[in-house]
Image (tube, rainbow, N blue to C red; front, side, top):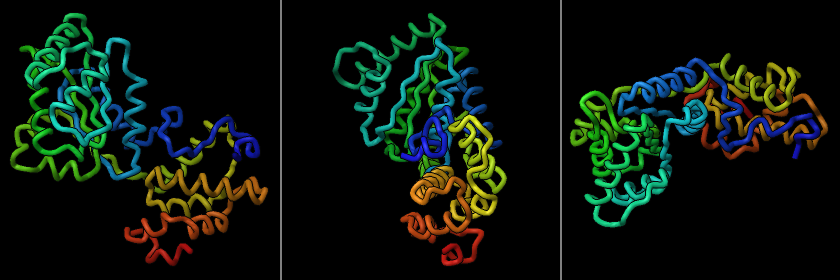
Length: 285
């Protein structure tokens, strides 16, 4: 709605993850590098965790853009599945022709596919998003997939991406063998104050193709104090602030405008239960 008013080629703070806007903070760059290393070196099991809105999906999209043509990827986001349904979802996402049947038959067909891909020097990567929703029994079945290997390398690389609850689930005694299989583990933390500023300016530069200052320093500082450095909340406040500026025909967003957006936002209730750099949420509004 406001793109033409500000001179944006596209919305800079869309809530839908877009790898074009990927900001390589130290944390996000390290997470991405860890994923690329683990996939290329066929390390097997990788676990990435982070709070809601911390940028896990954006990092995943950035990874997909970095993988070469010799990598086949299955991306599973529906994790309310049993083990057999999950296996069928993997086969479907990899576009493998298979004969339906019991889980053992499906696994056999999947193994044949992996062996063919290995002979073709093609790496197979399974990415399971929202993995904290998988039942422990299904996670154990996923662990069994990682047993598919030759004497020297894994036939499939498995990336589990989830909220901190995934950490607790992996700590269960019944998943000890899975924990021992994790070759790379990374927890994605929120942005700090300087990273938040750089993140906002980066997305504005990508959207506008210029270095124009759309937010005052005070506005950016307030956005950080409210969002606690969580990218999704940053995007929400910035988007609503730009919309407010468009309605009021103001091309520079100041602290007072951001304060009003925060006051009107349902995320005030979400953030009020968190420990902020402000003593109370009322101090924001």
